[in-house]
Length: 160
Ligand code: FES
Image (cartoon, rainbow, N blue to C red):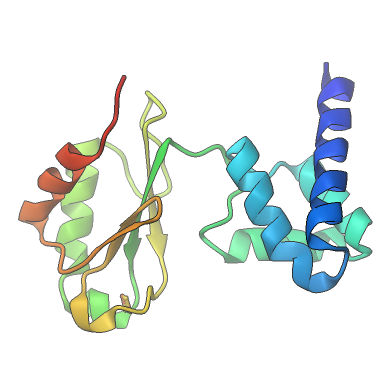
């Protein structure tokens, strides 16, 4: 079972290296594709990518853990990321954070039991004059208030 899974991972990464190339600058696109296809980047996938690109596994691990958009853990169908950088902090991100935790019943870094939502911190999203800024998967919300949080959660198409 594990061997078959590893074979599948190796084949997937071979295809991604063929698509993105084997240079160092292919690392992030390859990791993004692995995350998109599998919902996570396993230790084995990181080791395989490192071997294919001729870099140290610790470098791949460092990239995965540095960028909040990449993950070594399984995530929910909807990943909610709240900007924690200074402008959004000053614009009231803490109140929005508490409301998100309250409404979802999880803390930052966690995923709801039904696998629908993950809650994460993110760094500056480039809309500092419109904070607090929030991303739900690829969709950006700006000037988020605690009152807007349930409106945003309700608007997410989330069939059971
Ligand atoms: S500080 Fe939050 S978007 Fe820049």
